[in-house]
Length: 93
Image (cartoon, rainbow, N blue to C red; front, side):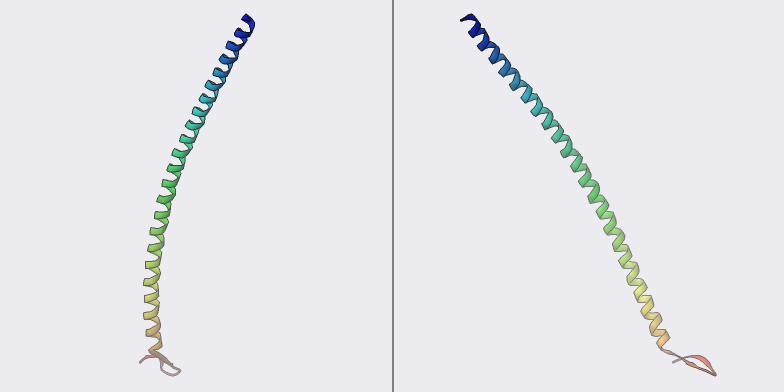
């Protein structure tokens, strides 16, 4: 009977040890997941900042294109007011 009780206690100790190992593994996994979550938050923040920078640059380009469009429209309207007379050259209407 001493052997069976000793065996039972040993099995309980082994089971308890296995539980502790699983708990520690779970804690490691939780720590790793927490680190990955923090890294993903940093990455998301950097992506948002980059996206905002690109948006600002695009807004600047749109404004520049609108100015260029206005300049070209004015230039075109000035050109259409001119005529070319072969003997006299360009004349403004």
